[in-house]
Image 1 (cartoon, helix red, strand yellow):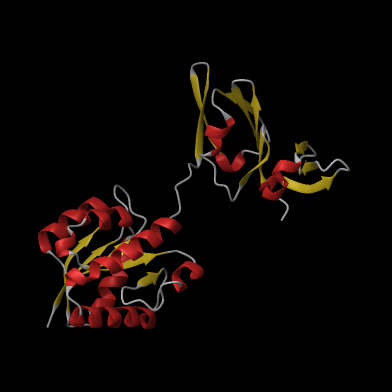
Image 2 (tube, rainbow, N blue to C red):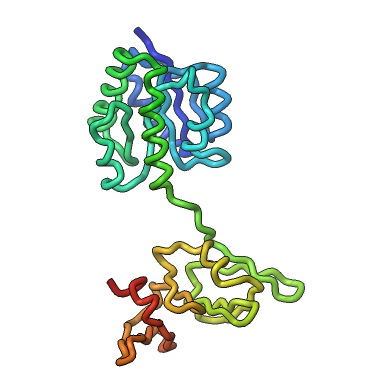
Length: 251
């Protein structure tokens, strides 16, 4: 028995590798190869595949959004193609619906596809919905938000583009915030809390109610008798860190 297979991935090399691996399985009939989420959604509706290799991070419509929008009465078996870390992946290692961690080898692919074949042979597709719901909730929890790499700042009639990676620290100044880089200082009409939502918390840490710092520019931290701290930057600038925020840097 043959099963209709659809591939959706925005990386051409990933699509080519999946197609090459599937050539070893006569049970697999590749009915569509898609470059983005919207194209995949239309192709799934058209071809009604039995199995979908679905990348999570895709333009226009990501894998989670796509999967949620599918008609559950005709839900295909889904294998997520991801770049999530091993801790997240191991949580679902024993399930029938599997994942492929990029980059993957033939042995890993074979293991995944064999699971899919068994599931297709033994399970009615409508029974896959609860399993998919479990996967959807899991990946939504671990999905990485897209933090902007560029910040735009208006300066008179000009608009300057700043790399977020170049921001050393951000301070609140009245109704504005100050963006400090190694070479320049920029004022932006925005609250610190609002701007904080745009920054990757793994890199930018709040050390005071009015200060956020890029940890890549920190040289050392000094403690004071009153419980506060001084954050010494590589450029010798000293920032105050209050005791209320010390756990953001000191664990």
